[in-house]
Length: 438
Image (cartoon, rainbow, N blue to C red; front, side, top):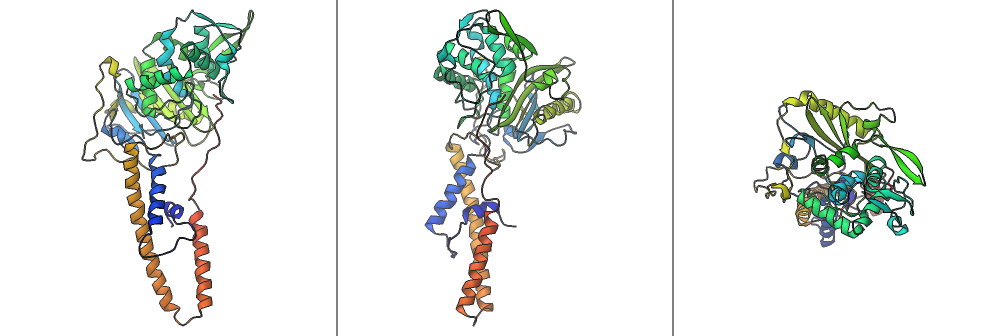
């Protein structure tokens, strides 16, 4: 079977020769660099332990992990100790959607008293992206800070986020503060572009980082209270109100799902570009577990079903699991700064997978990964050239004496067939443009 990567490199009209041309080398290098941008965390730093930098399922001392986990990344951890019980591609960088609002809350929540009142201006909601999820903020209406946070946590309202961000000094300032907060929390997979999680190029996070955001937030009573609220009355103007319901289906039991026993939050998210993301926390028998699931293959309920299955495992068979890593403490709270990776390469290299949305361009570490990818592609391409040359020699020997026109016709047919076969799978999947729904 043809390698689809090589199919992407060997375009029509590329001449066969015993040696790769300069153009071919440049083309292979260019092909490898975008692939490097789809990797997980840079190999330059290990956050939470070497095993979490590896690809694939990581688990020790326990069996029976749920079957049919289709998420591109997931992680389960003990909230109190920070021990990671199991993970899959923990540091893979993916679009976070509205789960990024946990970092927004970690950054801004304590800046305003919950009883403070604020009258919304037109400019406060003028920059809310089209297609955003909204709670229904209206300029001219006065809201308490508590009501605005209810709009953020229950309805994932980007309008509520933008009002609070403008109260905090504006979008740009809030984004800068969120990025600084992520760095303090040692969430180094995260790059913030907007405070609401809406799809923007370069806006990424990981299952590991989202779990850090949730763990840090749950230490705060207000954060914990908001994310666990099922319904609230929201101002509609005058003395009128309307009821809003939390979009966390494991909390409310909506869309045919059962409520999860012991669930205490935290945040879900969805965009057509990012898919479904969710970080949930539940307490049973005095133990609190955190689970983050990112981008299941299909189904709007899958992110909740897979979260529930991992929580069930953690409260059951996962009790015997030995830590495969740890959720690090914030630098501001005495957390040890992450150390460079060992030179012996014990941490497995990141796997090349489907294109990850929101890549902000390759870093130095990713350029190194890209160079490695280039070398692999060059080696594979060189082998292919040798095989082609041998086939060409054999064909020439067999066809000796045949008419030149017949040989040219056969070559043209072969090249046409090769081009058709090579085009299959060469192009990456293109996801539709993001409309933030929830």
